[in-house]
Image (cartoon, rainbow, N blue to C red; front, side, top):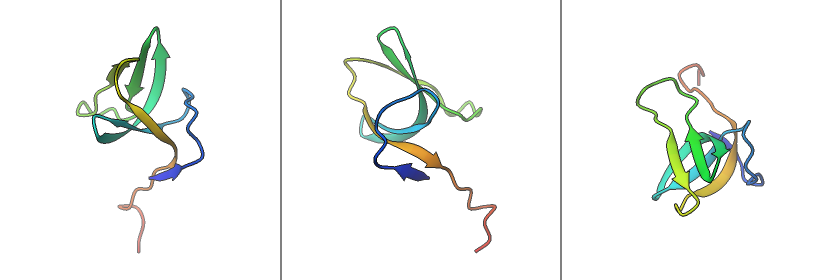
Length: 75
């Protein structure tokens, strides 16, 4: 994953690296009412949305710029 360390302002069109309960996750943010929804891009049922209230201790670290798939890269 390629991360832009200068981008910390959340928008709803880009994925961001969030830290929730000391665990990093890459999700698309969606703000609705007083909640922050962290939505996975994956269609796999294993990856679930995370719903946070303003009292939860989530940290937005940086914007995701690109994701590399090493299975498709020949070294």
